[in-house]
Length: 241
Length: 284
Image (tube, rainbow over all chains, first blue to last red; front, top):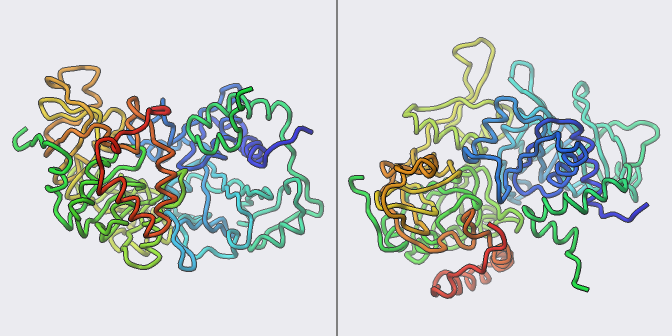
């Protein structure tokens, strides 16, 4: 097994979650989802289209920042990513405030969570502070009652320690796999909401040699161009010999 | 182009933006006029109401920290990769700044309603978000054309002033925005529109078939002023890139009130042409 960074493992999880989706959009300040999306694109031999809202050159949008939302509203975005200062067991997300603390704001979540075909929830921090029984403010709800038009919803929740599947019929998360170095008991301790889990929880697979080669090659180039701080931290430029 | 004014500099535009005005601003990636933002701080503007189209960053954080802002309507305020917007965050947590939280497409939709001259427009999604309870001006109605279909309507938004930076203006008073069409939307919907620009082009860009699709016609423009590197430390795509190192410097400095004041001292109050020059672009 080649050594890998935790960000690389998370990007591999994201690439698997995206699968064969045709059009993946990545919103503001999301370097790890963007890394996973580019990995997926290269694994799929360019069959997936990746639209990066913040792409610095050759940005895919020519109608201004409303175009992403118009595309999604028409059902042209298959996969999107959302995070949360708080995420609860009903897949509600909070990007606004909690216990006197102010976060940046809801961004496009209150629309995109409804409009994208599926949404991958991603938050690196896995703690009871973030994964709460009930969010203090619903920026975007994980579920809508019948009668409210909704094109899509949560697919999964990925954290720095584990991957949960979303079960739309039960409206609950189910522990899918635990990342290397963590245990199912630890996940239960560090998660503030209740969730389902099978008797034997599997380990999240580590990145394959092919995935690492792509990550450290074409994906690194694409990411460093748009997320320079993140790219340089994860893959430090080789020092001159 | 009746009434369009060619100002001598950003300070003259800042003088035209009255205290209490509502100001439509683009995100950090879409060319805020940092030159006028700095000039507003220097003229000690007060009680501005900022509208983020659809989010805000450095421009808003500077104005908030300098005491120029009474209210912010935005879908988010953050410095992107450089982290939280420290002056915004502290002002909200200390309850000295009023925030009208929104979600990106609601702001675009409200501006588009004004573009069309209609009082409101519907928007899908959002139902079930706590945003609605905080926004008495947003309403969920029954789709009048179809039974059992609740839908959100948002009111038309009309800022007093649209403010941004652009690569070119021309002698006819047109402004070239390229792909940054949200700037056109803000301009169309606002009562007045002021832009700074990098270079003045001779003639009329509307006569040029390649440039014309990226042009905001002078019919929407109240006044322009040249400001070379007027988006710095943010970018003008194709000309200069974001000064990421400077954004990091700002994020660290502005964590405290004192650090923020020192930043203003160095980069806003005592700004000299030398300090106004961005380092060579990493990548536009």
